[in-house]
Image (tube, rainbow, N blue to C red; front, top):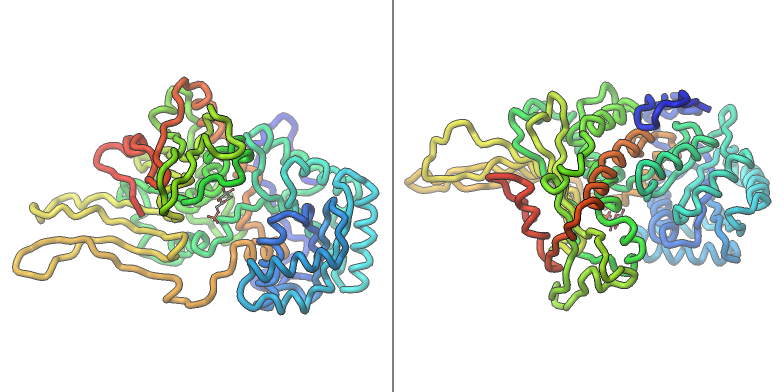
Length: 518
Ligand code: BG6
């Protein structure tokens, strides 16, 4: 166990070294060691819609270990057969093309373990069962535990994994835990959860999921920045006016009203997905592409963002709720009319925040993060807005500033906007685009983010997972925003469902800047 010096606050504790118990033999080798994956909450949606279909995507591509087993752990009285049928249905409906056959070939390696999460005997039986699986399938004592339950069950599962000894590693055998979001609801709960995890697992055994980090286009931010010579010299406050990071969704809260009331868009999206993307945009080049070198640089970005004082919140943030409107041909509910939502709720379905990274590189370049439900379309993008040239040679033209656009989804790609001469006798300038599209350039079917993340967890590579200090630093910032909102007497602004958010979001940007309407 790696110890945390007593009295040191969790946010300031130094990152713990990542030691892979299987050593360097994995470096560069993308085939994982034999292992058994135990999914807690295996009867839930995530397992059927995401986890098992993604495992079958890996199987299809030959990336699953040669010896592999899945044990579904949950309360419902399902049989092995029922579990397999459910998973097959999930793979058929949500998996990549032709993955049903992969499941059929592997279905004998799937079994179900019924137990209450709080029943110690259930974990003893699980340990015995895993030993049997090692004998039958050759999984070699390697275990990966996946917390796919509601967060309220995490604590009891973690306690039992530690008590039963299942979390312990021994020579040549790994034991790892993957934790789904939400990872706490503020810094206090996140840090308590981290402490509890630490009772059984060292930091290098822990894999905190942020599925945005598994998206190809998010990983491409590292490739774009650090495998090319032309961007990095411009990647600073001398040349970048501001950065806009947008994660827009057209769906409303649907059946998740109860959950959303407790989280709002700031906890659901900004604390994790948007801030993670932002750290990749703002970080310094890491010395190597190793888990700790990358995450050291990411966490420095978060540390360079000050917590807000309550009186700064009105100027630095905008929050709003969607209102009933006709959208995509139908009349849709306003947030306050959704099931599970209080009629006088203050929970925001849209938020925009201005974050300043107070370091040498970004001192004068604000980052604007914006996310919302019921916006006109589902789109995630990062737009780097460059400064105007110092001298305008073309007085009649008003070219827009250059923008480097990283389209995370859909329509994945990268585009550069620049001014060009319109053919003809006069010197008229118009904006044009250089456009790279993933689909056209590479053609391959893009794997789901979970495929990459499951594979990396099996490999023991934590680069694309949030480290303890990153999660807690992000909460520190978000907590200060939430505290400001709670102290304010103003209700959230409103926006019509299907619009780009409240007008107030515009003033956040300041003079001469506009939000993109992708
Ligand atoms: C989840 C949020 O983490 O991300 C959801 O809880 C949101 O509210 C989802 O809809 C968006 O993910 P993606 O991959 O569809 O952009």
